Image 1 (cartoon, rainbow, N blue to C red):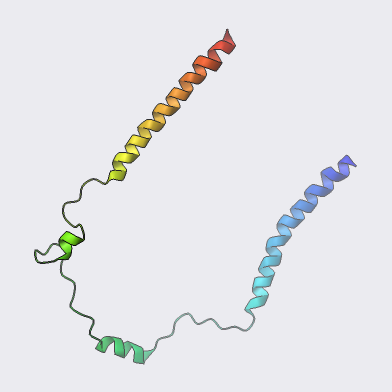
Image 2 (spheres, rainbow, N blue to C red; image 1 turned 120 degrees about the horizontal axis):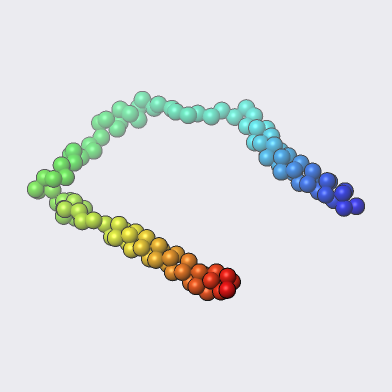
Length: 115
């Protein structure tokens, strides 16, 4: 009975693992049928309407003095982002924590087991 469980159960598991994706793929292929997939459709009338529409002026250069978005968008001198400082802080804390854990392991587990 042990041999039967040891051979049959892994074989059934392998069959299920291999058959399930094949069955799912077969269902997807069968569903496609005669459907037509349109990837692109150019509507000439719509393109002409877009060309005639008033879209507004071209955007001003970012560095222009009279651009109101210069102050609103935060385009002034960019400081170093906080995440850089936080990344180095977390790096040093992580390395220090790993060194502390290794030291405590050596002090409390490794050294007493040798004595």
